[in-house]
Length: 494
Image (cartoon, rainbow, N blue to C red; front, side, top):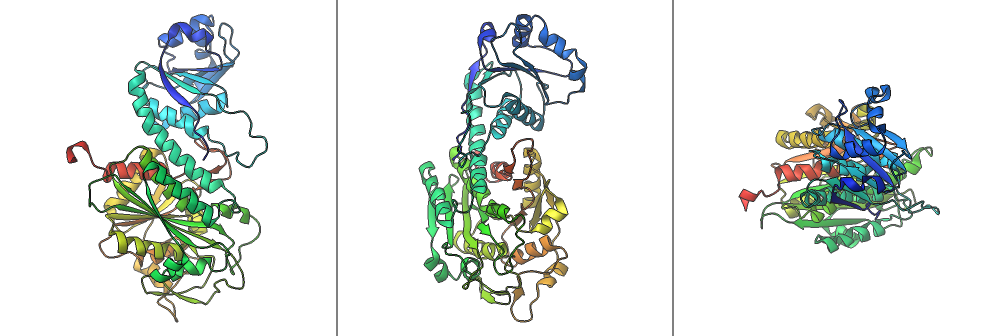
């Protein structure tokens, strides 16, 4: 796993500001007010800080932007970075400021004088998330990133908050690493092995192999992987930190480690990006890691279906009929609509075995979702208004875009088949919705359920505020917050 950049808290020592080395960062609000540390640095630089804050460039900067002075006189540092940020900045601004600092400082050692910033944890999270880099397969891995030191009035209290921040960052890193891996490295077997390592954190992990899946009747899932030499698997991860015997939240992830489309072969252009078609499973894994690292007082079970969708003499054909674990028959019209076949069996298993308090599935499911919402929002479908509302609230709080989409009988009717109980596709119109309607058929009455189509947000072709090009880790923060807000034991519950 990609290592987090080393980060620690310390009490500000004003007299040593001039000899820190590396990079130094200060905060100043829009009015250019300076705290004691900034005044000390301003004196050492013979007024350079004050001149920067009086410049037209500073006036044009937005909250969270950084103004950098290289090798300033009077300081033994490579650069001085001045961040435009109010001490009461909202979480999103503080995270963007941290990310901007990470870009400005690069891999250099960085000291940040935070003063009494209320959102110091969010700034630290932005720093960590934007410091991520996936270099496992590069010969030249570059310089190891230097340590980050956060100077605060109360280092001990800040360190406690930093533990929660690093737990979230580690979960996001885990997801990004999985999604960024090439398919010849992250096979179904190696994916399961990585998830099994979560036992070191107290997660109970069970791997269901093909004979067990066949015995359970997971024929829809097995149909997706039967054209590949890679064995299909289901991995079940239990984190039981809540009340004993309380029903868990079930998180279900699509884990197609590579998707050629099968016999309904995808076009060659862009197919290399299908290494990220296990993004839903990657998010579930990242959430489980975060929950374990922070010792979440909640019962959560993550279930991921791991398959590879390949064309071969044994592959499922368009027109084949398969029987799901539920017992419903499915006419496979398009073998490239495979994710829903994986999810439907794992979802049914989760409900039969766990009787969950709520079930949320995640998948890079449809290109139609990208057409509808672009790369800014995940699509949220749900049969339960409070669950949908909680997800949207958590996503907004974490700055991860999400938008609720409709469900309805008219969409469900598009799945009717003349030879089976249903088809696996409903045609081109409303493709993301008919995919959700397909999954809804496998939700038992009384189970609060939400489906997150993350096809547009799991991976980015360009740099974003909090992530470099590649896997974003979208969803780890949202689901972690949802669980903390709605399903975690509070002190008065104990």
